[in-house]
Amino acid sequence: MYAKVLVGPGRPLEDAHLPMPEPGPHQLLLAVAACGVCRTDLHIADGELADPKLPLVLGHEIVGRVVAQGAETIDRFAIGDRVGVPWLGWTCGVCAFCRSDRENLCVAARFTGYQIDGGYAQFAVADARFCFHIPEGYSDAEAAPLLCAGLIGYRALRMAGDARRIGLYGFGAAAHILTQVCVQQGIEVYGFVRAGDEAARSFALSLGATWCGNSSDTPPCALDAALIFAPAGELVPAALRVVAKGGSVICAGIHMSDIPAFSYELLWGERSLRSVANLTRADGDAFFSAISRYRVKTEVHQYPLSDANQALDDLRGGRFQGAAVLMPRP
Image: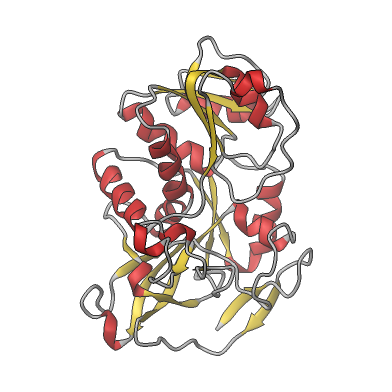
């Protein structure tokens, strides 16, 4: 099968023809229909996340159809089913985190497109216990960003509790999905984008954001919570400055540059600062249930699989709004 393969950090992905994978007892073999391009893929390719499996097939926002399956999967999926594969690819089930409904923190967890070959390929295998049925009404390309940008964004939103005024820093794939969910729930969204990025500002407002400014701007009111999707540590004190007493700042990315020192005064007043780490299967169930009630439209930019390097470069350069998606087949 054809795949784009990472052979080392900081190097372009290479064309490869790999053996067809075979599913184990708990696995599905999927013909990949679409695979989203996530900023996490950039962090892995650029060497900012340590110790990936090498050589590696990136990609953890996989939409595919079951073409073969292990014996232990037939209770959930059938040949021909459309399946979504997320970042969390396997957990041990026995560590303290797994036994306390925190499998996202499993000490032995393995992740799709990091320790497990992912979806930058024509075919992929995935553990059926960590896969999801994809809701109707979304094309393959439209569904792909839901599997990380949507899932992680929704986990971050749930951490914000009952916040009614929420700031979103970094208006990419996750924020554009989350804004639509928030607006339909009656939550006011305040967007923060890079200085001078008028396209991103207009995009946020078109999706229903109440206000959108530069990342250093002060919004017209204090916020109950701020979710940071951009991997820029300097946004943490900026967000703390605009969150009201008792509010929270949630760092929703897997990697972030160093957070600069800030005065305790910014944190005082029972403000909280926390991170989002991965996801649980329960998060996925909750998110897909939510978008059955709150319909979202994903803005996607499609690339043939052979152009994976261009898609990564365009993501790095901020050359599109929404999400990039690789299409293995014409």
